[in-house]
Length: 93
Image (cartoon, rainbow, N blue to C red; front, side):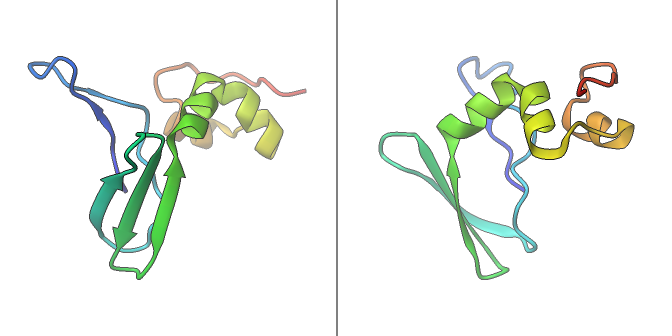
């Protein structure tokens, strides 16, 4: 997995969302595009993943809506994994 950190306050860095999971092996290389909108990660699993950071920010800005669109909601276990700072509730109809 890859974890992004906000280093604006270097004395107190903060995580930017949850981990970016997608590789089955250790991630060995990480590079941002010059415009900062894309992150490329390379792994021992012989894959390269391109992460659209603007899309990730949009999804993280509306986690509930995205979960409903993709899966019809989250189980209690999925909720605790993806939205651990919020109490579980059923949100999709």
